[in-house]
Image (cartoon, rainbow, N blue to C red):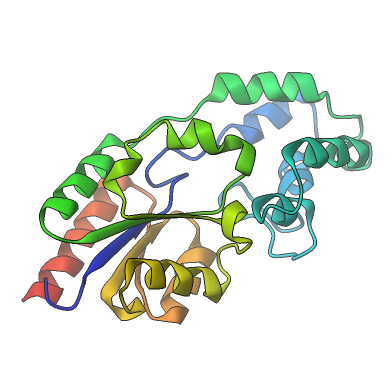
Length: 220
């Protein structure tokens, strides 16, 4: 295990399926312009896999705990007609999210168990929303993780270098001794800039194979 002491996992898109994968389908169903709802939710140039880097955008404020979910929704509806061509029906949108749901990548969870058995420290590093905490934390066995660093609790958000450093500090490892898995390219690049080895997750099985290769090389 020489060289690597910890493995850090994103939640949405890594431990779970991507939470907002159906937004494009919902736009078509509602007759909204293409990508208009994604832009309304996450900011200019954004997608569900890569929200805005605008520090004052509502999504950023929500994920760093500076807006409540109710405040975010109120402001979302206020801005919606200009972006969508019609006011957002928040009730219908909320129903769509409930029906969409989130699936768990159990192969990732199983790999966490094996990592713990092999002596690695493990963490979750997620950009998330305070009001969703009970739901997502209840979807996986969080006792498998030594640390959970949630953007809304710490007031920092990937790809801010400070949140990667904070996670490593809590794990008591140097960034160079950690591997990070995330499904957003900007977040992976941010981790690498701090010194972590990082894996861009597109397919969970392929990502696990890449993780195994990194760990085997480090232990050689």
